[in-house]
Amino acid sequence: MTRSPKILVFDSGLGGLTVFSEIAKIRPNAEFVYCADDAGFPYGSWGEPELVARILAVMAAQIDQHEPDIVVIACNTASTLALPQLRARWPGVLFVGTVPAIKPAAAMSRTKLISVLATPGTVARDYTQKLIQEFAGGCAVTLVGSKHLAKLAESAIHGEEIADGAIASEIASCFVQREGARTDVIVLACTHYPLLLESFARLAPWPVDWIDSAPAIARRADQVLVENLGPDAPNGDAPRRRAIFTSGAAPSESLAATLARYGLPAA
Ligand code: DGL
Image 1 (cartoon, rainbow, N blue to C red):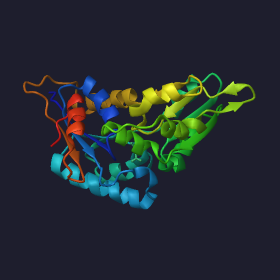
Image 2: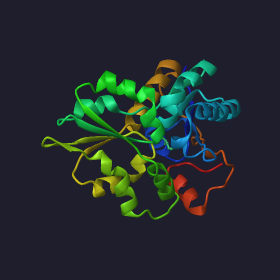
Image 3: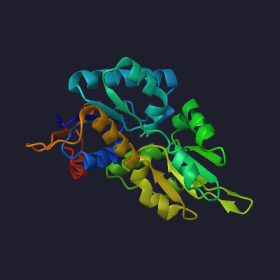
């Protein structure tokens, strides 16, 4: 027997909406809770032990309250650090994480110069180094840990105007020229960054392929659900969806309108 699953999508902020919207396309009948740990944002600059403790605490509250079938950690900074601890703590809950798409980037690159644009936390992770060793042996990989981009993306989705110069200086070191070759693939290894993709493409010194892993994460979440609960089931009622902010702050009018465009009324 199949039923509509309850999916908890989690990020430090609103970057995970880029993943949520892809899952919602594949699983339109699912019940969704989108949880933004805005009280802990940004995660990129947290120390590792403190961040693990934070994520486990937020998850404990969310899992207790919502009893999801699956939790999608729509955050590279959290996934590259805390997935093993989450799976160990809640063995009965399905978890799907978001990690830098280094494997497809290496396969796609012709110049074999690729860059990974992420938070300072994600570029410092052992997990990221392991991905590079395992999948990008033939490539020169430039890791760029941006201090400000996640905050700029968060401000943009809150309706603020962001100066081009602020974005351009954060992405500049992704573009490498060496022995007549240039970077041709850049991994968007933070779920906030696809929110700024139009600006990235416009401000890039030369065209590159930008890899957003959101569609692949959504396919993976769907596959895990099919394996464990069965295919999407029709749902008589309108699907229930809501956004939760750990700060308890009510979204501004402009943010509420943006969330509504994503099909997410704030709770
Ligand atoms: N969206 C998060 C990620 O994918 C990180 C943003 C942050 O909190 O620094 O890594």
